[in-house]
Length: 152
Image: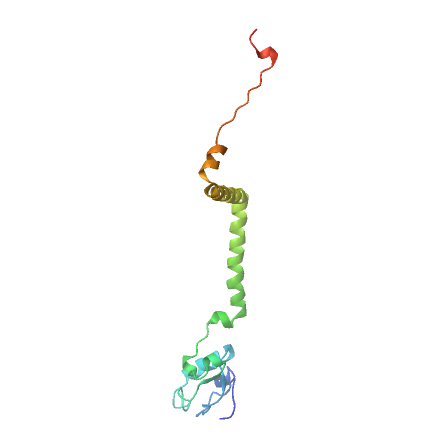
């Protein structure tokens, strides 16, 4: 009950000869910084850390309130900014390269325009009544003759 909310991750490394730790019932802030401390506590014997895990609970954020520290898990991806950036940037670059290759070698924009035109034409054809469609499809031919073309 001494209001420790974020114990240091290297606490056990700096205090290697500690014989007893009683830090339960504190308002622990469950975040990325607390992950390393939780892993360290898990490696120390239960005789050294008194009340583990029952009296070690998250107090903040509200979504984790009452969760035992041993049950608090947050992914490496959400805690490691560099890993998060790589996870977002690399697939984005791969997608950009793939689209560029498709555009250059397979003329993807032309195919996309043709698919759009085909869909629009098909939609228009479905919305036109049959009588109007039959009138439109009649073939009209106009033949022009000049005087020198006539048999004579």
